[in-house]
Structure formats: C-alpha cells, structure tokens
Amino acid sequence: MSETVVAKDGSDVEMRDVVALLKPRVMSLVVFTAAVGIIAAPAPMHPILAMSSILFIAVGAGASGALNMWWDADIDALMNRTRNRPIPSGKVAREDAVLIGGFLSGLSVMMLGLASNYIAAGLLAFTIFFYVVIYTMFLKRLTPQNIVIGGAAGALPPVIGWAAVTGTIAWEGVLMFLLIFVWTPPHFWSLALFSNEDYAKAEVPMLTVTHGTVATRRNIFVYSLLLIPVSLLLAVSSIGGPIYLAVAIVMNAAFALRAWMIVTRGDRDCRADGWLAERRFFRLSLTYLFAMFAGLAADTALRSAFGEFPHWPAWTWP
Amino acid sequence: MTFFREHELHIRRRRRNAWVAGALGCFALLVFGITVVKMSDGHLMEGFDHAVRPSLLE
Image 1 (cartoon, rainbow over the protein chains, first blue to last red):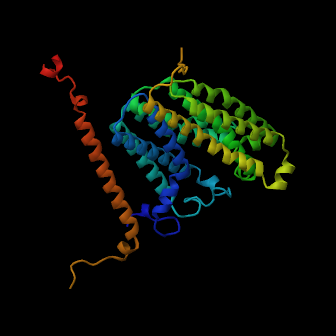
Image 2 (cartoon, each protein chain N blue to C red):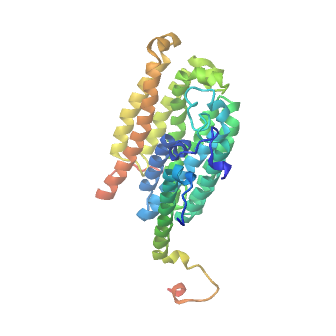
Image 3 (tube, chains in turn purple, brown):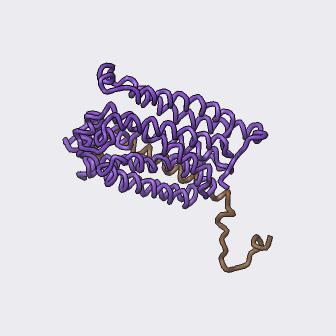
C-alpha cells in the first residue's frame, strides 16, 4: 500500500477532504470571473471548448490552493479560521497535498493549452506560479502589502478566459484584472480586522498586525474609493453597458458607504457588537464582485440579442 | 472456491475509488469531446508541410 494515500492519522483520505484542499469557495469566484471573461470576449468559442477552458482554469486555481495549504500548514494550524483545513486537521498528509497540487497544476496548464491556446495556458501557469511562489512562499510572511501584490493572482482568471477565446490580452481584460486587483485589499483587510488575533498569533504580517486597525480601516476606505473609477472605466469599455453601469453605481455607493462606516468605528465598538460592520463589509465585498461580473455578462447577453448599444462610448486604450 | 477475493482495503475505499473512476471517465469523455471539436475545426491542423496542396492556393 502506498503511503501517499494515507493521512497523518492513519485513516484513508476521503474525497471531500481532497475537494476541501482545492478551496472550492475560492474556486467558485475563479470559475465565475473566468466564465465572464470568456462570455464577454468578442469572438465565438465552441461550448465544449469554453466549458473545458473554465474547468481547467478552475482546476489550476484548485491546484494552487492545494499548494498554498501544503506550504502554509504550519500557520494554518495556529489560526482558528484555518485549523480545520485538511492538513492541520490530519485528514490529508502534507506530502499528498503537494503531490495533488503539483499534478493538477501540470494537468490544468497542459489541458488548457490543448483546449484553447498557449497564451491562456501560459497565463494560467504564471497565475499558479505567482500565487504559490511569489505570494504564498514570500510575500505572505514578508510584508503587509502581501495581499495587495498577491491579489494579482486572483485577478487573472477573467484575463485567462478572455485570452482563451481571443489569444490576446486586450484592454478590456486589463480592466477586469484591475477591478479584482483593487477589490482584493479591502476584501481581505475586512477579514483581517475580525481575524486579527489569528494573524497575530501566526505572525503573519497583515496590515492589521503591522500598522494597527486604524490604518487598516483608512486603507479599506481609500481602496473602496479607488474602485469607483476603475469599475466605471469598465462601464465605458466595449464590454460595458447600461446594466453594468447601473450595477456599478449601486454597488460602489453601497461599498463606499460601508467602508465609511468601518473607518468611523473604533475597536471598542467592534468588540461590543462582534465586528458586525466588518463582517457585513466582507460579505458585501463578495456580493460586489459577483454583481459586477454578472452585470458584464448581462450586457454581453443584451448585446448579442439586440446588437451593439447605440451611442455607447466603448472607449479603448488610445 | 472463489476466484476473486475482495480485500478489506477495497471495501474500505470503495466510495473513493468510485469517485476516481467517475473523474477519470469524465476526463476521458472531455478529451474525446475536445478532440472531436478540434478535428471538426480542421483548418488549424493544416500547417505548412513543405509541399504545395490545393488548399494553400485558395
């Protein structure tokens, strides 16, 4: 019997533990944004190739999640939020995680290359490398800017989706990248605010640990404001439209308002209500991203049903 | 006398093995599907092969 199929505590690895290793919740975001990248791209793609591309982008994301858990097993065991993950809870051995992650990384890149093109496959390989090596191995334990720079990995899926169809990285792809890139810091910092003790215990230099909660709140607000021009640029691009614009106005207003509520609070208020505003902001940030990309998909559907929107700016990079 | 003796390990891992079999089956189907689509879209396979053929002159 091979040792690689036996978990630390001697029991067999269950399929659900392997699935948990692939971070399915993160994967759902990757699947959705990559799918919108494919849908919004200005060229047709055969449904089987499109579905395969989305699947392999998702597998690549899952693989990087497994490699992240392999590397971070020591700090995951210290944090309440992550101590039930498959490796620290003893359900999957570290050696298995690195094997699964490594195998799925290679498979996903190779298969995406076959299903779409090698530009998309190269971007997926870069995303996995960036997330595992640059973010997980270096940035995460080195600098409070960890999730700012590391956010690039999470922002790439729609660009990969776009490249899978067109074989290029266009201005619209860059704008979708920027939307997720600027969204990532406030999303994670709100989580860090109510998980600060966890990060401090594990000595992860999150902004809340190195610069305190006041500076983090201020940064959340600044990034929430930065999101407004970035998201509006998408509205006036060739993939934007009236639905996206309406969603962007509503969601940005809600996001900025909630960010302002966070910046005006103190730690005493937070402890009193169990970090309610921060938890709400975190949940809103998830809704924000799904709504914005759903808006892009809806405009693409409208455009394909009724043709281009008359007088819509469709501004591109000069 | 039985020709097939099921090991305890097989019983214990039946569910996981079924999942692996299902995943491999789906993967094979997917590769088949991609192949069919790529073959139907055959112009991508017609790279220059150092010999003139009618389709190059069109």
